[in-house]
Every structure is written in C-alpha cells, then in structure tokens.
Image (cartoon, chains in turn blue, brown):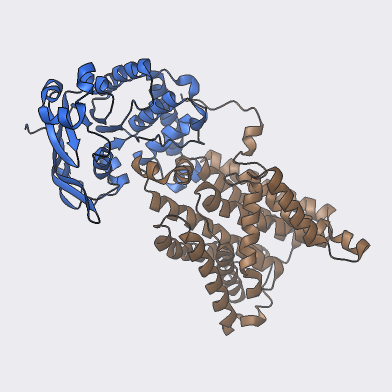
Length: 260
Length: 324
C-alpha cells in the first residue's frame, strides 16, 4: 500500500519438520495502525508473533521492519529495533516487584557500564532516577501507582495483564504486539482494555498488532483485520468487510457473527 | 567519586577493625578460621551471582578457585612489585592477577556453554573443575601431586587478616552494587523467564556470560587468598567436593541473597570447628554427622534457604530513595 509500511511479511512461511504451520504469509502494518489478527484455534497466530519477535526464524520469505530486514535477528535485537510483545500466557517476572519488571524492560536503553554500577557514578544515578520516574509515570497512566512495590506474580490476573502491557511500553516500542490481551478478562475489564489500547496508541504514537478471540474487542477497535486459518491468510480488510466475508464466516465467525 | 572514596574508606576501616579484633582477642587458630570465613564469603557470594541471581547452575567454582590460587602462588614465588615495608601490597596485586586469569577461564568456559539453556552448564563446569585439577596434578612445575610448598603469605598477621577482609569486603561491595543496578535486574530476569527477558531486549547470553566471568574472577580472588593463607597448595584441595561445599553455602543462605551467602559462609565454616570439642568428649568424630543433620534440618525447615532472596536492608525500615 503506502510507503509508510512499518512491518511487512512477504511470502513468509515456516515449517517444523514436515508440518507447514504458516504458508506464504503476506501482511502489512502501516505506522500508527491498529491491526487485528484473528483466526480459529491452532491457525498459527501466536506463531506469527513468534516469527516477528525473533523467537522462530521463518523457513522462507521476507520480514521487514521500517525498511530493514529482521531475518536472523535474535529476540533481543528485534526488541531493540522497536517491536515489543506481550504473551498469551502472562510472562511477567513473577517473583520480582512491578517496578523491577518495568526496569528490566528499560535495561536495553543501554544504561551504564559495569564500572558506573560499581562506582555509582553520575550516569548510574541519573539512569536509576530516570527509570524510577518513568516507571511511576507509566503506572500512573494505568492507575496502578499503588502497586509499584508489589510482587508481580501475586497480583490479580487482570492487573497482571495490564502490567505486562506497561512493561512492554517501558521498552519504548514502535510496534506493540499484544497476544490475546483480553484473554481471561471479564466484560467490564475488556471494555476498559479497549479504551486503554486506543489511549496508549495515541499517547505513545504506536502501531499495535493484536491477536484476539474477543470479537467485540477486535471489531470495535481495529482498523484492519487479518484472518488466519490453517496457516494462511484467508481474508484481510476493514472490520465490516471481514464480517461479510464468506470465507471468514465459514472458517471462523460462523456462529459468532450473529452476536457481534 | 566522593561516594567511592567513602565506600573505600569504610572498607579499609572495616578490614582494619576485623584485623585488630582478631589480633587482640583471638588465638592463631581462631584467626585462621576467621581467614577461612573471609575466603568462603568470597566464594559463596560470587557463586550466588551465577547460581542464585542468574538461575544457572555452576558446579565448577573450585576449578576457578584453583586457577586463581595457582596463578597467584606461582606469581608470588617469582615476582615482586613492592619491596620492604610495602611488601604486603603485593598480595592484592597477586589476587587481581589470579582473579583475572580465572575470569578469562570463566569466559572460555561460559561462552560456549551459556548459549545453551538448562543443565548443560552444570555438566560443563563440573568437567572443567576436574580438568583443571587433573592438569595441576600432572604439572610438575607446580609440584604435581606433592603440591606447591612455601607460598609466601603476608608476614604480619595483622596485615594478613586485614587483607583477607579487605578482599571479602571488596567482593561484597562490588557484587552488592552490581546486583542493585540495572545489571542485577537483568540477572534476575534471566532466572525468572529467559524468553520474556530476551523479548524485553535483554541480551540473555551476554548477561549470563558477564555474570559468569565476574563470578569466576572472584573465585580466583578467593583462591589467591586461600593460597597465601595456607601457604601450601595441593590439587586435592580443589576437588569436586569443594565446589559442592560452596553450592551448599549458596543454597543454605538463600539463592539470590548475598547477605544469606555471607551468613551461610560463616555458619558452614564455624560449625565443624565449633563441634570439635564434642569429639574430645565422646571420642567419636560426630562432627560430620551433626553437620549434615543440621543441613538437612535447615533444608526441611527453610527450603528457600536462611534468607530466601531477602537482603540485609529489607530487615530495616529504610526510607526509599525516590525519583527527583
């Protein structure tokens, strides 16, 4: 489409042994867009995320972010490029405090050298102050300031989900990958989350790519949707188009389209 | 820099205080035990960096200790930088050299093995420790199985103890500041969840190798201190069981608690010695029985170790330094 393509996958495929999990994937995310990736269970959605974030290397095809290839990059390098993700099954550092969790995401900001840490130089102090300030700021946006010193793993599920998003934001992403952010959340929490995702996108000027099963959330906030089935993109377009797409209804929405 | 100076000042005062205490009150036997405590503190805290903070399992600490000990001993037999009344300043220099060579060994061992996840490190480090021991056993130039005699130590016992505690305190200071920094958070993230850590932009391999090299360095420093305290080295001192001893201290004190490692090092060093009189009464050597029983009991009652992952400052209500 336009020249401002942020992330693009071209003919990207991956196979594990003889099993083709993704076949010739073509996806594009423009900067500033909020894109949804949906599909029935086992369609390969999380695998797409794992490829983008560098955990798996695609067997063939291209993967570019802001014009440069991500192929062969390790997860931490991808993260440093500006793609940060959350996980379907929350992967917070559960025995560490919320602030420490956020601090780890800021570690890549290349804080200071070993010697600065040992000598507690100016650099050390300025980064530590800056990190605490930023952590506070982020927690405030989410209204979670009071939980700063709590052990992350001991918090309620819904809050852990939000903290995982905060942690991802602390890593200053340009593209945020959310893997089922609403999984396990109740109705009101999901509503809240929808507002939040839109809010952070504007506030942090991010692009968001999210995997979600909650159709209300996807149809409600996404500007573009990709539908994945059996490792292939079977449809893409605006939510209304997806809702009317026969293939999609067959593969996935069928019964659910009624209550969207 | 002002902070460094004051930290250094406190460190020197602390080591001189310990030396004065040991010189004034303790007999030579007790003074020796005090030196062993210093050595074990260095070994336990440094191993905790890898085993406790990073969640990797190293079983080769005795190997790195041996490297540091032999390098330091051989250097001290052939090489002197300071002479006369400044003679004791040679020993920190030897310790630095021993530590550095051990750090290089740590890098060589860590580079390939830390790329892998899981228990490979335990196997590789175990192998490394044995290789080092066997090499030393067959190196005639360092005495082979007979051992290396006449390793010079600080002639003045006052200086000796002060040096031991200077090195132990210095190790503590460096490790403490390291774990309280962004690097410390990165270490913990590797232990918690390597995949998540990597996705947050932490270069986990580099982080692990870094921790391992720092840990090996201090193992070498501990070895150097050991060499100059006992004045005699033998490959048998660096057997696999020595590594296990250090692991016991780390587990006992609590994985991820430097304070715990210090307490455990003191406990593990003193207990067998404190039980010595018992042997005189009963005529049977019950020391190891009681020692192991107390370890078993501790593990049953406090499986997370003495302090778990808490540090000394969590026991005092300090005001937290907030953001400006």
